[in-house]
Length: 269
Image 1 (cartoon, rainbow, N blue to C red):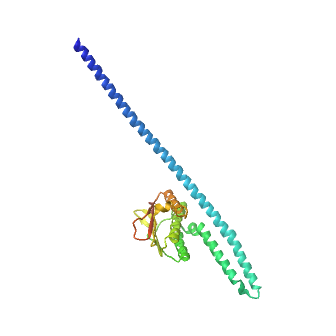
Image 2: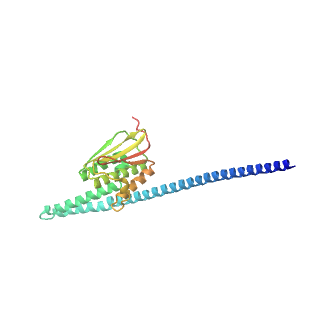
Image 3: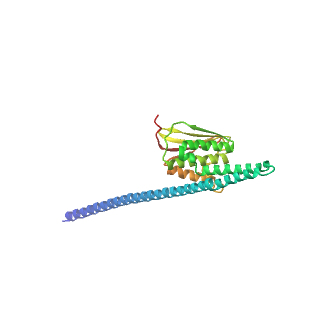
């Protein structure tokens, strides 16, 4: 009888232990499942937030481009047209003066103003980009920067590259424009090289100078001079393009920034 009671006690203890182990296992499974579910939900939220941020950045950049297009049209059509009309009027008036040369200085100043208005209009919305594509537009951009800054700017096209979708071409153009603007204004460089080509089916574009160099992280936090905002806009555009932007570090002098975009194909020959 005693042995039977002990056996029952051992059996109950064994059942209790098994029940506790099963319960512990169930709790572990529940916790693991719950954590996986929470991670999945978190990733889903992050993906939605990322998508929302992407759409917001794209909307902001599109708004900026729309405003640039409007300003470019106003400068070219309205202000440019009025200045040209004034130029014709001055020429007519000069012919009626005893000394027509007295108006020459005024006409030269007006010509410089007209040239500046046209340059600003082209920078805001380059017609070459819409007509001939981003390669020709970047080449023309380099030529304009060289003419106004007196800095030697070399453009190298190392592959015959297909045209991109219009919005992507505009973003690439803006990135190069901002990088050139930074190099000309802040780098104290005497030479700038812009290179575009294909490596491993990826399109790459680099802007390199022999100036004083810069620290990208420090400039990103520098919003007072505008350099931080410029880098912020460059990175936003690169992100929307699905590309990567690399600021080369540990250079003995100067700086080099490389934009790499998803695979493209060269033009058929």
